[in-house]
Amino acid sequence: MPPYCCPEATTDNVFAETTAGGQKLVILTASVGGGHDGPAREIARRLENAGHDTKVIDLVTLLPGGSGPVLRSLVKLQLKYAPKSWGRGFNAWTGAYDHHSW
Image 1 (cartoon, rainbow, N blue to C red):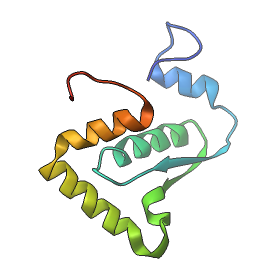
Image 2 (tube, helix red, strand yellow):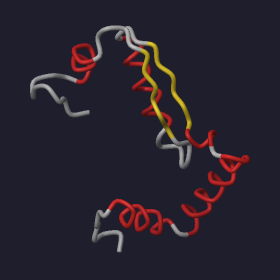
Image 3 (cartoon, rainbow, N blue to C red):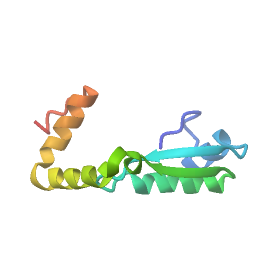
Image 4 (cartoon, one colour):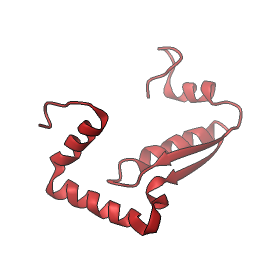
């Protein structure tokens, strides 16, 4: 994580300097593909070590009508059978363009 305050800061002291005060913090994640949950837990761990209360919330579990597991299954199928479509969809949604994925 690049520090926001100064170039000589490390990740650990940026957390200590910018999050001191024992706040209650919510960290949002989305459990599709598995790449979001680990970083969310690590961020929570570091914030808790700095004296904060954290709660990690998986947005996929908040989808209505039990559609979270369906979404996870669809993403797994997409990544298995059409992996390039993930990058193309992401680039189209964010306006980014990665010439390697086309």
